[in-house]
Length: 287
Ligand SMILES: [Fe+2]
Image 1: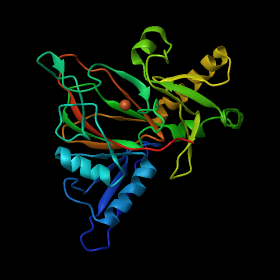
Image 2 (image 1 turned 45 degrees about the vertical axis):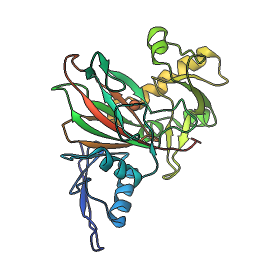
Image 3 (image 1 turned 180 degrees about the vertical axis):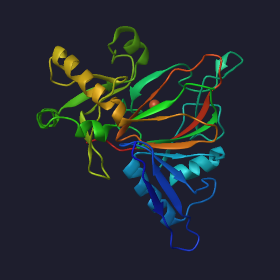
């Protein structure tokens, strides 16, 4: 695996220098030299945003953030998104956990593996990105795999790129139906139509914007044709060469760009505790 290191030297008083080490050929960078519990100087933040756009996923090890620290860090990138989790005092923090208290799970998405997806693509404005902070992790498993949808798009043939341009697909929130029948029931949950190929609003790069967990069908194609085409696109996203797999340690902070990546979770033992805190960042309408 080619590994490169970029140094971001800061010139203004109070600005922090940091390094970024590439984690896989297409996606992921590990940042060292920053304590995210401290406020960032504007010059530092600008360099960090540039690194995020380049690497799509940034990893920071050995951090210790309060809920408020994590939300403050998210605000450098955009507007933090509210939570469906009622347990946290800070409404922008969502717990992802399998921990049960009084028979109830304390977080969302508690158990087992999760197929590849981008977050909230069943909404008009899916997340721009999100920031995860690990509090408790299992001894093994529960890894998060991140796929570069840029790399997947770049691997398409010229003919496929031409054919896919302008197509849209329906994305739905109904995991249970999908797992049970292989079909979504759009009468049961939120769903939205988005382009099959999305252009990133900041980098201008194109990526595949359909995923195995949430995309139902391509609009305007006979179902059999859509059913044949979609798995080809998913497999391209999920090709091992296009993936960085993150093995969690306590104290990790990881932020992903939800506009050009997909993620999936590997299975983990039922009896082991896993707790991550997530702060989402508001996104815009894909085009
Ligand atoms: Fe997710």
